[in-house]
Length: 256
Image (cartoon, rainbow, N blue to C red; front, side, top):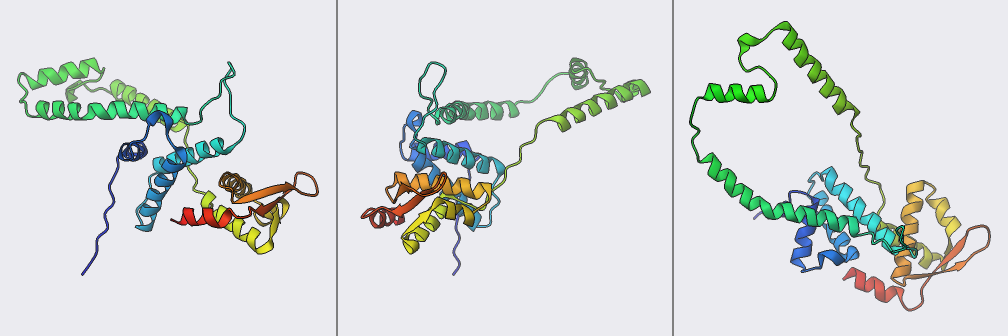
């Protein structure tokens, strides 16, 4: 007997986010970013476990969700020129609303496409193709070709190639850290040593990305009341300790 595992396929990351929002009946203008981020990352982990290649746009959206989650953990909110607080989710919500608007029009466009494909074209095909060629400024018949026209076409192709090469390119790098994993590692270190200074933590993870993920993990644990911090000795140092009576209960809830 063999078992087959199937995951639903989505056309893009916004399609997946809309699925979570509609399934859980969430308010799109007030997205619970912690819940939606965990569900999105869980879906990507399922794909990785099945050795399915994750598209770069999914990874980019995951990074965007983590950035929004980190901004919402910070105690200081960004403000606009008028002094109003800026919701870190606002840009994501606008993109989702725009994607939802175009997605809702897709069935109608699909029906129109099917109806158009069922029709039979009439008229002089050569005349119509010549009209299309004239409208797009290229020749339709081969006998109209000349060395000058070929060179003009070559020039246009090379210009288009240069434009494509000069367009900005974005590279998405998947870092070997996650906030959840660093949270578990730091909490284990605190439990084993009773307390942990931030300087010692930096010494064990000296790279820039590691320090960023550790700092986000500390903010996350403070939000969950897993740890407490006190000002330590030295410049810009603090001591991390386990929150009494809170860590075990919260970790059990996270495990569930």
